[in-house]
Length: 270
Image (cartoon, rainbow, N blue to C red; front, side):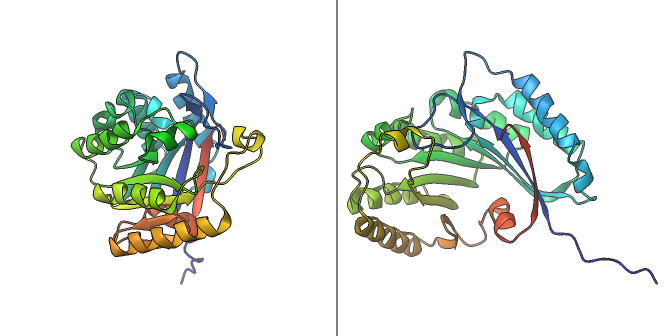
């Protein structure tokens, strides 16, 4: 009789794409303002070469999830994303119900690519809205406005994405409880299956760290948190980790793999 060892945990893959249109003042990730052109083909080749060095850790496990983050991955063309996913699949077997997420920012140049991403194999978008209020978006250094935020979500649905996440922040400069709640209500009205709602924090090596904005005090931020959680609960969203809320069965497989101590591989610059 042959003895077998304990089952290995599920396997996920994180892919980092470091370019942005411009650096946000609160961001401490490895991200950089793009030049006129991005070397897509060369970077995809480098990502796959990076993955080749990690294949010994796969141990014949299929991939449960892929998360393409950044930076702003939606600056890459659908052709480049297709080459990336195809290259990964030639190296690692995909689980039949694999979740493949791509982070995307609002803006007509980017959401015009959504249909191409869907055809390339992306089946989940994470849309970096942050706020539906133009004044707050300007304070956060975002390059989109409130109208483009709504348009991006509409474009995601039109492109065939029934599974998408809306990324929102709270505790923003001089934000009131009413303003924070209005952002959540605007997001809920789009009926996403998943919401990420996290508090703005000031991190070292960011523009906000050098010139801190005026943020709500601790009591106000606690009230924002309580009011927001009540809104989300009433709308049918369940909190399953610190900043992630989902409707029944729509929790992110990638998030859950991190939180449940699954294995993951990371490739790319940062």
